[in-house]
Image (cartoon, rainbow, N blue to C red; front, side):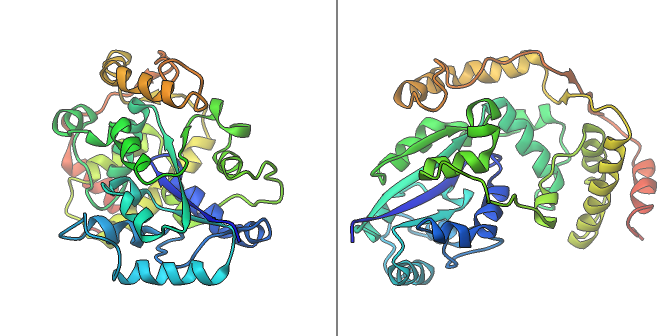
Length: 328
């Protein structure tokens, strides 16, 4: 048998990773028929999160992986199934600083990282929205306050790629943008990276976890941000976000959908100017990603800016939240 391939979907965050992980799990039988295997070891909510966490959560993250229970179990599993191609996926791999450890642990495998990159201004807006919806950290800041207090080191894509190249026999860099993904679809694009050119028969991911990741309208997101200032348990927060997601779907269907953004055009251009040199270097090294000199399309004034409230009436917010979730 020739050397097996290990495809490691690194993420990054906010590139439909949860959707894609559920997509792979849902279509695992069809993947098996095509010579691909999606392991169960280390899986949490359909992604191999525990594999990545087991590396970077250690006190000595540079030490070899031998003896780590979840990695030893993973090694036994993939050695027994005998598929030519193994796929693992977790955006937790984005935080692994020494991925060469994986190559040393699995020297008989050809390591093939797959990394999706999102334009930095879009990434910031999307991550900010997710951190409002999540119980941890339950952001209360406006997006400009968030920018002032966040280091944003995760937007250094060149560093991320350089780290994974140390472990890679081949690396696949893709851009999370419908214009540059096969059929404008991340599922079809990911399969194409694997060499599966026909995605017919593959079923889209669905379910409550996918709904939790759905983007809220700006009005609904602003309501959740203000509610985050209220004392709330994890259960109350989850109940509230589920109500908001449901009501937001109804509201969105009842009116014309307007494209709104949190960051104005000047701020977005400043962000992209900060990363322009790095993005250009990535594009030069990986021209198949988009073929664009600066890797991503230029920022355009494509939406009105949503104004977040600097101050708000806490009692009014409490009354509205209490109509959905019993607060006291």
